Length: 421
Image (tube, rainbow, N blue to C red):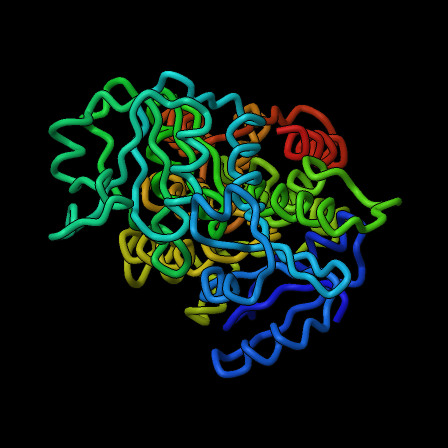
């Protein structure tokens, strides 16, 4: 191999796609067992490699030199083979530093709380210290270990974080808490952190973790870790000296990956045009379309009207929640939702994991009643539903599109709003 990624298990890695978009099509994945690692490193049969879990420390003895961040952190994730000598770098350090700067998160003079004490926390800590943060501590579930080493003196318990560091201005999550498949968990409660100004999460699957969602719900800026992955890859390519002519810039790759993987979720009143517009979007963007009502019909093998008549609305709402939880880990979809689906906060949270919610707001005088909709049989039903739900739609929406043109116009407006979000 010339360029690539080594690790133990890499079935869902984004790295080949990222490096291809950057302009390096000669990048592959190579899974190695611990037994295979020594012969691979000693063989030096590569020009440049990235290293991921669990080998970021294990490769160091095979290297001739390592850079300053690698020494400080104790881990290497990028290796250059130059004339038979191996040079180690930590481009995760660069990637995280750029993630913060690109999103206007500045650490100088700030009180920073890092969640987690693993290898990534050391990278984040090094960035914080080099950025002249005033205070930097790392929180662990078990607190500072007995007989702590010098490197562990900055570790505190989560109880200490709540009691002694509630004035933290920046919180940075380096734990796997909230990562797929346990996406509904958050590493910390934010209630006591009244001085919080910004946050970042190194997790990128899902695109919006519960931690990020909780921070944003308070009107505070929070970013996920996907751009960090791209920026460290771009730095690695620079180190290897690969000619990236024709490739995209790092910020363009990050934006493309996020938009490609982010679902477009259409919400709104029955009869607002979700079905028609979702089909137009799916055709235009070449994406898979999932209609939650149709999903339920297939699941139950009966109509929505029959479900309501036989088992009642509560049963149907529970089915909607089940569907949302099944869809929340999928990416790149067009999702058309039933009119009442957003009434449950857990449904909204699930759909926001990997999606943006678009509220199609149509004048109710133009909505036709009936058409098999059990709760919208008359104009009076439409008015009542709108009065009950409009506030929920507005609160849930990331984007609102007024439906006052042709379906094609509305689909194009929705598409433009999504990609410019």
